[in-house]
Length: 187
Image 1 (cartoon, rainbow, N blue to C red):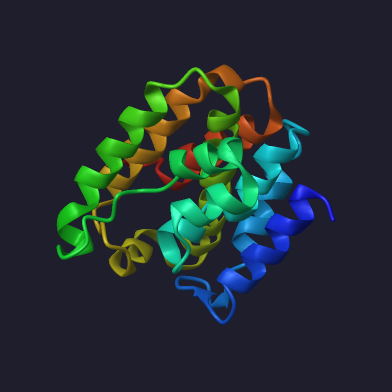
Image 2: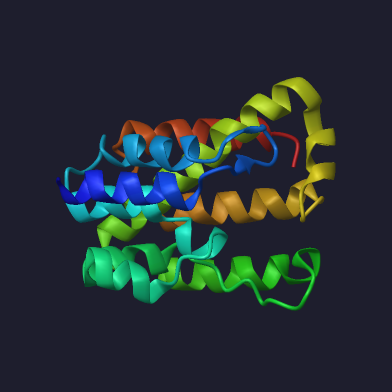
């Protein structure tokens, strides 16, 4: 079994029974899409494994140590780059800006192109989802998020676009830019 296959199998188990809250689809489809997007920019097996695992530490009972033990330091580092400190014990609506600022600071401080590819892949998957919602609901869609202000959401997604702009030659970055511009056109 390859590292990627092992990661896919692990992610399927870790996310078993969960759905993506805004779309009501099996959660595992998101990491699969992230891995598919990442594969258009890199064939690094550790990166593709991390794409499958990127939400396991943040959103399941999986620990960072478990990822390290099972998949090695490179995969663990990549997953950690995408794992937010949830500031447990405080409401998500209260910590949204703090979490995003911390994450962006980490993204901006790296020279690791694989980290940037992982971030772009994850955020492109999110923007595809947002775009589908936006076409159906317009800006009312933000009412169902922890951060209901579309201007703050726009700041976050535009800041990421700038932070990964070294990937601008890839179709994934171009699609991301297009979706950000369309969804946040009036913000």
